[in-house]
Image (cartoon, rainbow, N blue to C red; front, side, top):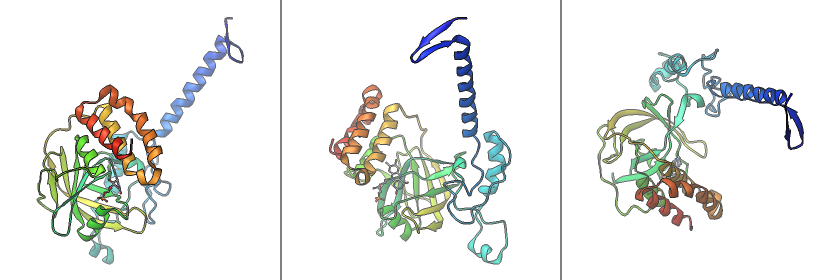
Length: 288
Ligand SMILES: Cc1cc2nc3c(=O)[nH]c(=O)nc-3n(C[C@H](O)[C@H](O)[C@H](O)COP(=O)(O)O)c2cc1C
């Protein structure tokens, strides 16, 4: 039987094979567990609200089956307040969805200043995992201008964009003038002309008791302006850097600069001028 020297001793080939097979089995079962939908709302981090329903998933399901089984019940149309008081209609829909059923998408939100002018902020709302975009859960921090403006006018527009330079300019407050926009069609708000997609929303439920408001919004109109032509690694790095920048006050400049340096190789390897400019804007804003 062949043997191989390894640090710390000598193993037979069969013993090594057996260890490898066992490790692969463990990894496979971990991965399998990881794709099981989080179906017990009470265990979900997203289901902190009392009254969130347990979802009717009792067996392993593939995603399409899971969505077909779960989404209609989770994503049924919201009852009107008047229905709730009379007990008419379907059971209330939980404001928050189980984590496995949602995805956070990073984008830009326009809301309205009291004089009707445009306010722009980066925001990552939760949307249903199938990305149907009929509902968004916005989570603006309580002290943010967006939270304040949406409390006054509970309407706005969420945009998906591939323009990371715009994202960097918004986050660092270095826009010299508002981007080109036109009035929204169904709500009081603004549509960014250069966004890939835009979703006009109206807030139907608000929980402002926590540090972050939980604003459930119905999408009332969707616009597809141009195709999203993909992100390279540098663009992903800029999104990460923008998020780091927005946490500058929490983590401190030294820590953010350290993390930006870890992202920098992605810029060096794959950035075009726009991503490079965006990254440098953020790095400079962090004092780097
Ligand atoms: C990609 C991205 C996503 C963000 N998502 C959120 C979010 O969901 N909630 C939030 O309060 N801030 C979020 N931020 C941070 C805000 O953009 C930042 O705090 C900003 O200053 C808020 O602007 P405002 O005070 O004008 O509303 C995000 C930042 C980035 C770059």
